[in-house]
Picture (cartoon, rainbow, N blue to C red):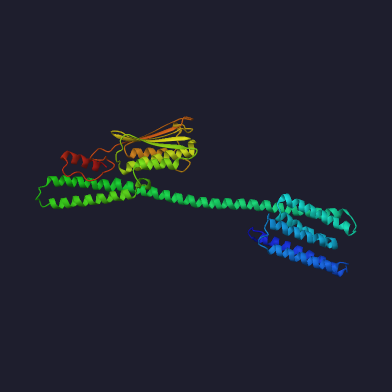
Length: 423
């Protein structure tokens, strides 16, 4: 009779309602039989019919609140009750459980009028059977109706509030799971990036220096010297290990960079960040050149952080990302038209828990670059990071790229070795 969850409280209430209605019908039948009423047999039959009809509706799965089947069932139940009420004054007490059924199964706009009609019929039975009319004749049915209305409507309000709380709890649990997964993914990516940076800055740089020094030593030894073969094998082993270290670095780079170039990763970032209330555009200026992995990671992370600030804090409607390749440097500009902020009061940490601008500045500084921020209240924000391009042939102090040409001039080899030792 109700699709709601069968909690102990609701189960107890249903059992009490069933027992109350059946008990009152049995009482009316017994009193009619014991008092020798003229219609005792009809009263017993109608009481039995009403009890059977009530049991059928209570067990029927299609009798649910606010359905046509519930209305038909209550109409049939009310008709049998009115017939029983016309024969026995004791049937008026069945009105009390009927109040609860009507309020529970019918919409409020129909349940309240049905309760009023039922109360009026109960009061009218006093007059029909010629009983003494007292204030209790009116107060009893009306008070019972008022108690039923207050009880059912109060229970429905509590049930709706309980359902809202349950939905909020489910949403909170789901959000907490998603947050934990996001934090776990972010932690994994951060650790991958840290390992890639550590391998690049330590093992790769050290192996590059060893390779360059061994090449210089090999050049200074005679071709048929006893140590030349050993130096050559040591240089080749260092070269192989350097290539392996670079493979580790590439495997640990951010997934966005594994799917293409830096420009493609920034284009995908712009598309993902764009929303109905924020338009993000991306442009490339100059002739693109291949950048070392640390450069690409730093520029991508800077763009992600700047866009995250624009989405979460600035209320921007438009943002532009520009990647510019120049003769000796590469720069990334992220400009938005948000509310801006006072750069003199730059926070140390963002509300999202990241380091924000200080982290961007630290990335740029670690690669020998600079980061500048221009902003003001109501004037938007412009974040620009500039990194020096690696020197051709040496690839800069931060990214040893590939072995040197064995036939390169001696001064180039010495310079490369100095770069590797400095790194």
